[in-house]
Length: 379
Ligand SMILES: *Cc1c(COP(=O)(O)O)cnc(C)c1O
Image (spheres, helix red, strand yellow):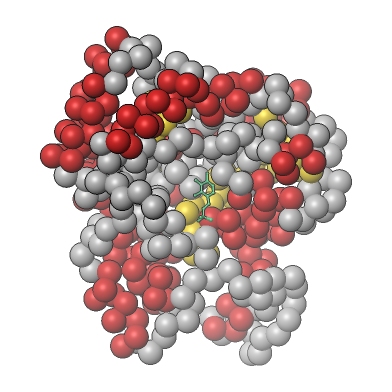
């Protein structure tokens, strides 16, 4: 494998992670739902203004929980952007649901809400907006349509922790929203996620599904005197070891976010002239959206130029990966009737996008090396 001088991402410790893990062992509780998990829940509820957070083993699993909570079944339809990670769709396909792929807006690369109405049928059960790069989807329109049709909204908020739409935290709009703490996300515990439940009528069942279909959470709170098998479920709760690690990251989030903001902002100012001269588009952040500095991407004029750019950066030891391969025209997408040409903006953007290295420990010197190398590239 190629050794990169500057990787795309590098997870780093923020300070207290190891100490917290030792504390979890000292507490004598390293399985799930101990003190650190509860503290993470409280912090996430505060950040997202959501009544209930539950840590999960991944964002993928949090999405799977939403499909179970909504009782989705074969024949149901869920509207998902084609330009997303496979889990956004797989979680529903696992329940036999038919995904209905929708194209993205050319500016924010988010699900194009103007095409939603025509995708809704009497089988539609949920809309799954993905806040790409943590820039909010047009939630006013999406929620209005969903409400008018009695459809649930599940926000895939894997990129959007700390992002806001019209002053409200991303993740607070849908019936549910999901977070990822995978190593590539702003805050991490290696692998991890969370389910945020904004409609409290789902809380009791969510706790049961997360605990193998048992009412063990109620038992630990003293609400029932024995626990048993009461519903469907699986093991969706992470260990305290991970929660202890994550709690340190959550507590350091001001510092982590400030560093990411500094890197993002420097890319934006250092590359503006070059982008303008070379027909390169940089991210669009609408005035009513606050972004969490998750990603700095650029859109090159076409696939050939994009591939040449990746090679140019790679030869200097800088990894600049492209992003999502459209799902509608993938091998699985075709099984649901997806065809090349169905989502033209997705297909176009997928060919032209690359992401620049962005992580909290990226030094100024290394970032200057990246931007200097970028500016040597002439389209
Ligand atoms: C990272 C990511 C996921 C999956 O997160 P995991 O925690 O790895 O399961 C889902 N959706 C989007 C948009 C992501 O970026």
